[in-house]
Length: 322
Ligand SMILES: C[S@@+](CC[C@H](N)C(=O)[O-])C[C@H]1O[C@@H](n2cnc3c(N)ncnc32)[C@H](O)[C@@H]1O
Image (cartoon, rainbow, N blue to C red):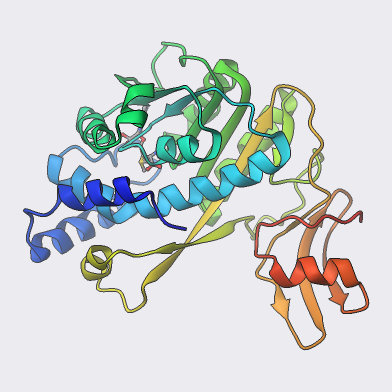
């Protein structure tokens, strides 16, 4: 997975005047801020330099995760999405991904921090078509102001940043504003998934219909000490490799997500929960189906299924009835 060339070029352009030592120092500071103040609502990035470095260091991974999740959503819901509200848009990674996957005619980027808005706007200005359909507005999801409505209401890596007791009411506001679907993406960690698990139960109770990732609308069967997450391989730019002092030219971004529709949809029959274990002549898959979570063994004898399993990755579905 790679960001569009115009976005890659624009993010790298943001930091060309910052020397490598400062880039690494700011990048480490951002990581510390997120680790120390996660879930307190106080880890906002407010300085221009922090936001610029955030854009270079984090946008490729958030763009990749959102694109991956949205492609799973499109597989099931289809692509009838003409408008998007991106809540906590940050520097715009999810909006860029929505444009690639759904080609909407309108994107509303709603964000709390002015510095994020400035950088998000600057990045989009290099893509006239995107800049022409996107609008940016200062917006606080925790305020009383309703979320501006769209076919798709999305947030990526935002809800876990809100104080725990405010998350579900914030999600209610988003759900109300969703004309067709709502998609929420969070880090693929125990904490990120626990946020998704709570949202799942809450929105199903409110009448939402499951699009993805789950093949069922019953109680989630993932154990309390486990978490449902997917992974997306993202290519690192030369600059990213340098800032992170990374040994390999890619990173594996882990994410959890949930997508609901206002109208009933037919969910997948099975979702692969872990990296497939490929052996000679057989493949072991940890799957979630409509009736159970189990490890299945697919052998060469199951011709069609074996062909699918050989190409599948964690997060993919299998076209097979279980
Ligand atoms: C980790 S960043 C994610 C940004 C972007 N969605 C992405 O995936 O790259 C979280 C964003 O949520 C924004 N945010 C946090 N609390 C918010 C609130 N109450 N209302 C609106 N935005 C908020 C932050 O300012 C920040 O830009």
